[in-house]
Structure formats: C-alpha cells, structure tokens
Image (cartoon, rainbow, N blue to C red; front, side, top):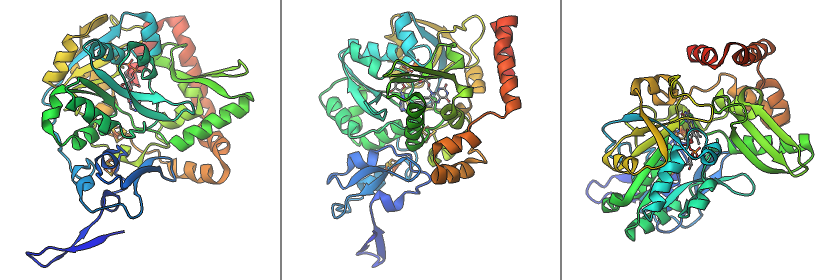
Amino acid sequence: MYCRDINILTKEVIVISSVCNQVNPELCAGCGACMNICPNDALEMTCDQAGFLIPQEVAGRCIQCNLCVEICPAINRGLREVNQYAEAYGCFISDQAERQRSASGGAFVALAKAVINLGGIVYGASFDEDYHVKHIGVDKIDDLQLLQGSKYLQSEIGYSFRSVEKHLGNNRLVLFSGTPCQIAGLYGYLQDRSLLKNLITVDLICHGVPSERVFQDYLAWLQRKKHSRIKAFTFRSKKAGWNNFGCEAHFENEKRYFRMWWTDPFMIGFINNFYLRSSCYHCPYVGLPRWGDLTIGDFWGVDNEHFDRKGVSVILINSKQGRWLFENLTGVDLFKADLRQVVKHNFPLRQPAEINPKAAAFFELYRSKGFAAAQQKYLKFPALKFILFKIYWYSQFIFGERWYRRLKAKF
Ligand SMILES: Cc1cc2nc3c(=O)[nH]c(=O)nc-3n(C[C@H](O)[C@H](O)[C@H](O)COP(=O)(O)OP(=O)(O)OC[C@H]3O[C@@H](n4cnc5c(N)ncnc54)[C@H](O)[C@@H]3O)c2cc1C
Ligand code: SF4
Ligand code: SF4
C-alpha cells in the first residue's frame, strides 16, 4: 500500500512506499538486498505463482525510510563503478576428485581454497535436504563441497548479506560467489564502501535461473517414476563427459536415473528458456565489463589442445582485487585464453536469454494439468531432432572427439 507525504518546500504530495510498490516486478531479480537492508525487518522474500522469490511487506512494519528503494539494483543502475577490464584464462584444478565434483574445471573450488587458506570465509549456493538452494558461508576446506557444482535454480540469499557485512567489519577476508544480480545486490547493500577492501566477488556467466516450483514438481515426478525418495541429485553429472552434461539422481531404493541434458525434461525446459525468471530475459548483467572481481564459467569453445573431458573452466579477471586472488591460486593448470573466443561461445556474455515462444502455453498446461502432462507435450525433442542428436552423439565414437567438437562448434 502506498503512503503519502508532503514536500514542505514545494507543497507537492509525494508518494513513499517500500520497494514492493516501486520495483517493476518483471525486472526484480530476487537478490534479497532490500530484505537485508531493512532496519525494521519489514520485508520478506516469498515465492510468487511462477516459483520465484519476490519481496513482500510484513504488514505494519514498514517505517518508510526508503532505504530498500535506494539500494535496489533493479531501480538504481550503476550502484558500483563497474570493473574496467577483463582478461581470460582457462583453468582446471589438478585434484581429480575436486574436479569431478565441480561443474566444469573447478575454478570456484580453487579460488575458495585460496581464500580459506588466507583465513577467509566463502559464500556460495548449497542444496538443503529438500533440494532448495540457499546461500551459506563456509570456512573449512572440507565443507566447500557443499558449494561445489551448479544448481540451476535461484539460490535464496536469506540474511547472508548481513553476515558478510559483519565479517568484513571484523576485518575478515570474504569471497562471495553468485549470479551477477546477486553480486550487484550485495554491492547495493554494502553502503559503507570502506568494507569493500576485504571483499572479493565472483560472478557466474549466467544463462538465467529456472523456476523453483517447476523443479520441485520435476523431482516429485522422478520420485513417482522410481517409487522412491531421492537421496542425491546433480545437474552436472560428468558420466558422459562434462560437455555432454546431464542430470543424475540416486534413490533410497538404490535405483538410479541418468539423462543427458537433451533427454531430461527439466534441462530441456531450462536450456530452451521455458521457465526462467522474467528478469533474466531483460538481464542487465550480461556482457562485459562484469560486476564481480572475477567471473567463472564453462569454457565452451576451448581449443583442442586444452580440451579435457573432465571439465575446463574459464576465469575472467575483472579488477585488481580479482587479479590478487588469481595470483594466489595453487594446484591448478592455467592457460591464457582469447577473450573474443570466450565471448563468441557463451551467449550470456553478449545478450540475455530469449523467452521460448511456447512458454505461456507450457505454463497454461502446467498449471491446469501438472508437470507430467506439460513435459510430455513441451519438454521433449521432436522425434526427428532426437534421432539426429542421437546419430550425432554416437558419431564421436566412430569419427573421434575432435570431429564431434568441431561439428558442435558450428551450431
Ligand atoms: C543458474 C546458472 C546458470 C549458469 N549459466 C551458465 C552459462 O550460461 N554459461 C557458462 O559458461 N556458465 C554458466 N553457469 C556457471 C557454470 O555452471 C559453472 O558454475 C562454472 O563453469 C564454474 O564451474 P566450476 O567448476 O568452477 O565450479 P562449481 O563447483 O561448479 O561452482 C560452484 C559455484 O557456483 C555457485 N552456484 C552454484 N549454483 C548456484 C546458484 N543457483 N546460484 C548462485 N550461485 C550458484 C556456487 O556458489 C559456487 O560459487 C551457470 C551457473 C548457474 C548456477
Ligand atoms: S531486485 Fe533485489 S533489491 Fe530490488 S526489489 Fe528485487 S529483491 Fe529487492
Ligand atoms: S540472467 Fe541476469 S537476472 Fe537472471 S539470474 Fe542471471 S544475472 Fe540474475
């Protein structure tokens, strides 16, 4: 609800309200900065109809201080002087077990270990026991595995910005990793710029985040199919090679599920932009320069000399702080990469995702008949495309991986 006030100089009636009334819901990225900054805990993040977190006022608590509006990155662009340059490196961590747990080459865990070894704390996204994704802080090397691996959902920030601020205030080194909109939210939140000297941020090259609601229904659908509860799930199983990633689930009755992305309904819907958050289709954080001190991603388009089936990451160095941490990396193989090549093969470094023209029809059916019916109609490759993909997939065992990768790069 809007509140009214009067400007005593102009006598003009002005409208004061919390961010909930001021932000364009299509552009709100759900970063949680507004909830963190509110001095009276008047905002909470709730799930909207499509399954995305949005801020909501707690009745009667807003004191109209306007802080949430002032720091919201969807309302105020340019809260941070964006970084000036980017240098690109390819990276893979030498420890094979670490690399196996990582989505690509393990750039994140290498950076995180360097920070923990320097006495710092690392924030990132972790699954909870019900497969909701939440940001947590970790300062033990053994706990880093909670943050490893991509979770293709929006991570709930909770009050982690407040806890980052507390550590920075105590002069502790903090590494904060997340999607670029979360990094922008953190910089908006941290009003005391003197705190930034101990903060290093890592943003992800980001395709966009899919709906949490659709994901939970997909998990329920899988559990019904296998008549058992899931005990482990990954979006980036390397069973068929890191670049042919797929979803893998282990069930309590010891059954298993593994599908490469082009046969798994949730991944087909994610990659084909059926249910991304609406802000992702207008994402202002695509491209260069970046918001984080460092950027990490999959090194799609890596040259044959450095290609490795176990995964290769790309790291962009965007600032002096980023360079400092990069120089502290140990236990990794690094090689200089051509930034233009990296941009060419990774669309979120050029433009936002485009909504699938059938997204509205998918949601209509999903709402009326549920996930099983909607996936049956919309989240399957047409028969011909499926057969072509299959032929293409098996061709690598006949003509070799180089041929396969060369063909892939053409599409
Ligand atoms: C939603 C999403 C979309 C992505 N889109 C692309 C893309 O289009 N192109 C590309 O090259 N790379 C993309 N990535 C990044 C990619 O999946 C890998 O994270 C990257 O290659 C780094 O891998 P790694 O081996 O270094 O580390 P990993 O161990 O896989 O990295 C883990 C890091 O990812 C963070 N993370 C994981 N899930 C989330 C989440 N839900 N929200 C916020 N942070 C999260 C963790 O906090 C940690 O910092 C995306 C990641 C996510 C989460
Ligand atoms: S973009 Fe972030 S700060 Fe702005 S309203 Fe949405 S959740 Fe709040
Ligand atoms: S695409 Fe943009 S708005 Fe969407 S999650 Fe990624 S950074 Fe945030």
